[in-house]
Amino acid sequence: MKHYLTGAVSGFAILASTAAFAEPQAEVLHYWTSGGEAKSVAVLQKEFADKGGVWTDMPVAGGGGDAAGTALRARVLSGNAPTAAQIKGPAIQEWYEEGVLADISAVAEANHWADVLPASIAAHMQCDGTWCAAPVNVHRVDWIWANAKVLTANNIDMPTTWDEFNAAAEQLQSAGIIPLAHGGQAWQDATIFEAVALGILGPDGYRKAFTELDTETLTSDKMKAVFDQMRIMRGFVDSNFSGRDWNLSTAMVMNGEAAFQIMGDWAKGEFIAAGQVPGQDFLCASTPGDGFLYNVDSFAMFEVAGDEKQQGQSLLAELVVGEEFQEVFNLNKGSIPARIDVSLDAFDSCAVLSSQEMNTSSENGSLLPSYAHGMALRGAQAGAITDVVTAHFNSDMSSDDAVQMLANAIANSL
Image (cartoon, rainbow, N blue to C red; front, top):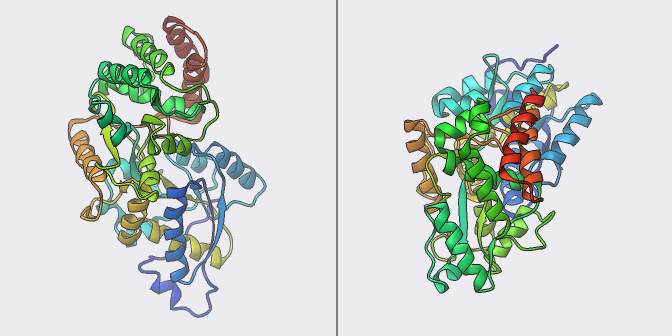
């Protein structure tokens, strides 16, 4: 049986006014462990404490969240679910279908979430018409980051086509600079792959391939061209890339060891945390092509027993979507607020560009969920795609074989 939170929650004053209540408690499972991420989650911890709450932190290292997902499943199966866990996309609905998520509609309705969140973002947070998760931000995935001084020294502009990227990379390689900082982990391979796919397939082709799983698109000549470009990209990474964490790749760009990184805008949080200035020390641009791939961090709320835990859950949900946290958190994290009513005056030029292009993409139908970051597909299908991408990236597999393997892998995962 699902546990349902009852009563409107606004400003938490309603709950706090009853002296009989114990202090709100929340055990929060997340995978924000790198420099910029840790600084960001500390903001939420402080807000929670300032409201009288007791926060128990359960960080699980691993940028893609796979390790955190494993830890969460173990907790839930043992009957000891955390108050909240960092989950996103269709995985929220998967947990709901297992009957373990709480209904936080009282919080959402009292704080008017439906009025301040984009409809596409809000849809990810709802389960059969109820609210079951709270969005933290909107990340853009399809970014290229660059060391400004390295590009200037080599008379290179930020590439606007994949041919321009390839030419720049070859020039950098000849100059003894690693063109592309990359960590050889499956989710990072997938991040580059979907950015290349969006640019080559276009928004409609991306949608057909990675949300509709259209076999004709998956085996098309354009998809072969995507794998051709991935083969070229493989030649632009250094020999020590295997297993490297994403933030270490960001550091390579910071120190000038590498020129470019293709990574979501959580990478910007690393640059900012290191005191670097956008437009001066590092550059940002969308990867070549049209469209915007989004990744929304969120907290799903699990069924918990005990007044103090339920109060903690209510307080946490309210704070996560609150204007203050949405601004301060995203300034640290590198993302933009999920709320549409938060001023961007304090945000940097990369964030403003992200917001502008998100709005444009939303209007023209090219605002698309990231497959690589768990927004577009359920785990089995996304995993099937990524397995093929990584197998291709780390072998001499032909593009013809890759597209056929891709179609077969998806068919077997359904």
